[in-house]
Length: 150
Image 1 (cartoon, helix red, strand yellow):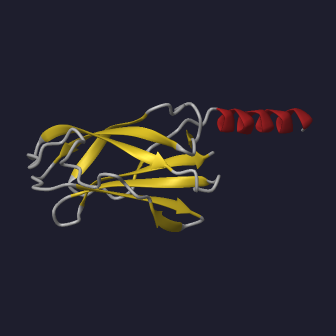
Image 2 (cartoon, rainbow, N blue to C red):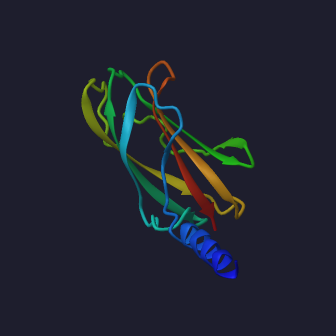
């Protein structure tokens, strides 16, 4: 019985240690993300560390199923189930983000942006919800990024 308990404990520990960062789809409607990259993020960890008083660069590769004449960026941080907006320097995803609007359907795109992690943010775990929305405020892509502000 003791050996079984040790085996189960070891397996549970290995599962926790082996947990890598996963980006979840949170409601993409007219597109699908194929890759998400955060500069300086260790993807072998369960959360991406966001250091306060720095800027974090993100890129999202996605395929589009419908034409979009305009694209805006909406970012929220979800802490204890409550969504709070993250301010962006440039919410217009068609300017200085690698996208040239209008976007054509059945094409692949790469969106890039910088997120300021303000010194005033508390040191907490947060689920970052990053949305690219079309001209009708419909999510082209929606990505959830597990993060920890330090």
